[in-house]
Image 1: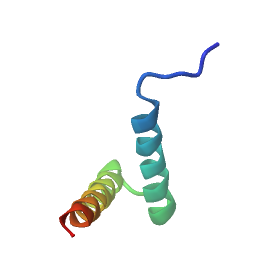
Image 2: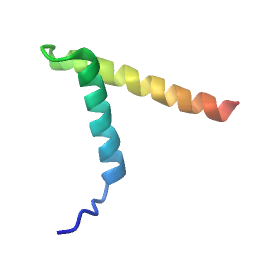
Image 3: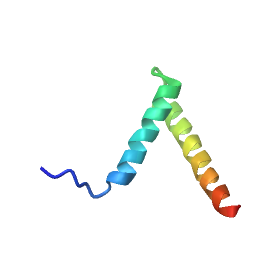
Image 4: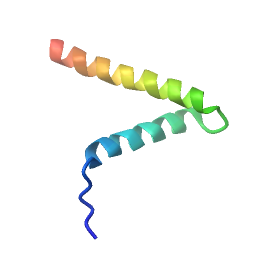
Length: 55
């Protein structure tokens, strides 16, 4: 059985991001709370990358 997945790199990033948000917030929230935090984290990450290239 091969473990060469077509989108492994992006899938790994998505799962890692989920666990980072979950570990920070904990359990017991509605899905929307996790989704808002995930979006905020993603925007911060993208902004940091853009700032790196502008320097």
